[in-house]
Image 1: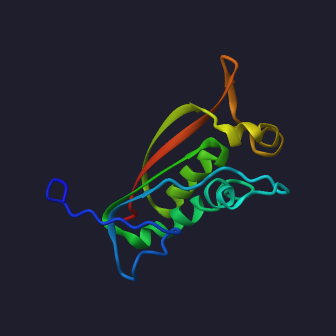
Image 2: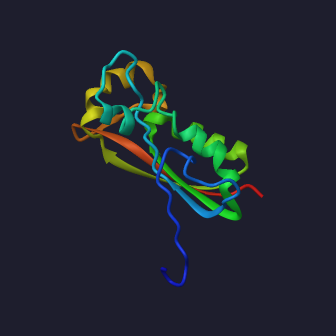
Image 3: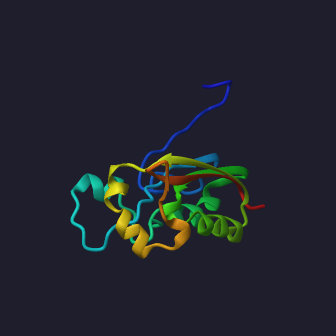
Length: 151
C-alpha cells in the first residue's frame, strides 16, 4: 500500500498478463520504439528489447488501440517514446481513439544503437523522425503522453 492505495502491477507482452474484465486507473507503458533496419541481424536481446519494426511502432500502436479496454472510466494511459517512432502520429492516434492528451517533450543524447542507425534514420524516416545535432552531438526528442481515457 502506498498512501492507502492498492498498487497492482503486471509485466509482460502488452496486455497478455491482464485478466478478462480487469480494468486499471493507470497504465504505464515504456514501449520499445527504435526502428529496425530491414536486413540487420540481431541477437535475442536486441530483437526483444530494442527493435520495434521498420517505423518503430510495433508496440506503440497496439498499446494505444487496446488500452481503453483496460482503463477505468477516469483512467489514464502514460506512454513515452522518441521522435524516431513519430511523435505526431502518436498524438493523432490518441486523439482518434478518443483520449484527452497532455504532452511534454524532452531532448536527450541518442544511445549507442541509435548512433549506429543514424544514416538509416536520415535516409528512410520522415523528417520529423530524424535525430538532430546540437553542439556536435546527436539528439532525440522524447515525448511523454498523459492520456485520459475516452469517455
